[in-house]
Length: 394
Image (cartoon, rainbow, N blue to C red; front, side):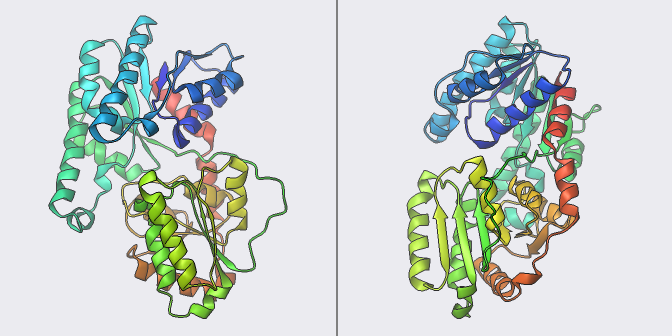
């Protein structure tokens, strides 16, 4: 089986390494071939080159993260996909696993027409069936409905006219059920896949939560993840003196489009709320730094605005025994409630976040973790992710 990604960022690298770690420690029925950006391929060769059942094949320079924007970016990303299918046919690989179905759905029927002997597997991110009527109708109105219909018919088109073997959805059994019902196939192709929680080690220091109530927002600091609402929420706090007992940590890499606006918003917050301690790390963190940030936190913020998305931050917070606060709607809300991972807000807005921050600061000692966090992490061990993926595709 050929595993393909044109993206060198974050989860793609992690997912490949989880699969290869599993293959290195267990008997796998198929040869695993990896095609990826050179920066990832070189790392994989160094780590897994001695394992006979693993082959890191020709990789390419660049990744989807640095190939322009819009239609130009999309067209440029088709070249690596074409190369992957052509290589798979030449090497008589019957299966290709594309790590991100969303990017390539429109062209998969063409690939199946040109390369009819290759079966396709992939992961669908942000399943549109999680978009509620309120989310479709608010703010963007008509454009929101168009987005929903576009995603729906793209998936129907891809499943009808391409040779799709398995479509995985991360963490969301309800979305799996809805998608299989929507597609109406005799043999359902959409399956549940646990989003793996990696086992990372911290720096080894004796880190403990600050004496202050420390709010952590970590990972890709994108606008849709509510980072600007968080900053506005602190500015709106009525009891400014309470901020002496609070700390905000923003750790992660903003998008190029948002970086300047985010830096300006942080400066404005510091000027308006000098008693609030604000710490920023606007860059990609190492694994040890990532773990250390959780150890320093009191509560982890996941006020994401897209109801159809999951988040690996939930797993990291559960492993660190830290509660999270996130939206009531969507998958994140379901997971928080089902596993008692923390607290949910009826509306992800600056007003609701501000009210929560005020309550949390005044009762920081009551922000307890839950024993069900361990259950959440156990179900999402990396080996479970790899085994389910390989059983379906090999």
